[in-house]
Image (cartoon, rainbow, N blue to C red):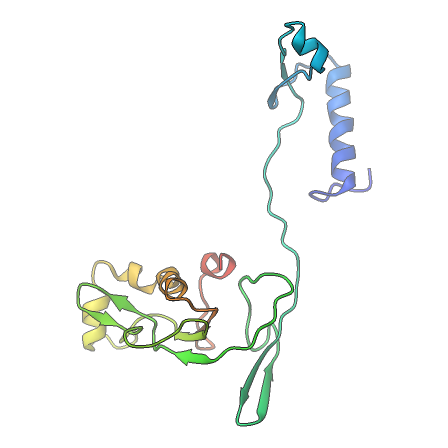
Length: 194
């Protein structure tokens, strides 16, 4: 059956074969519900569709397509090109897009309404690429004011990069670059959903 890779021709062939064998052995279907298809004339004559149970169960799958990207930094007539999956990794981007934009650094990209702390305050990031440090102010120093303020009972909320992305997007950023140390990587769930 050419193998059973998800979404490939062989998967559908294998599923059809298994369904036909279940039907041949007299095993009742227990999959998705559906209705018989009626022609226009049958519907006009008052015939009602009959509910059917399928041998199949449809499951929504997400297909990941490998793609490559390129990031270059241009300053004072010199260009530095970074290597994909070596110097950086991209969590998500639209296919076939290319743009040039200014880069703006916003520290931790951290906002805390309660204390009034806001790395974005007074910084115009609209239509620019934002560079943000991961974590929050003082996260490595337990004696710092930042650590005492921001790693309290809500500490996990503060370390979530999602809030930073939402803020940058709301302020009109074209893209976001998160800087992490070599020993630190963003949680997979944050990387894959951008």
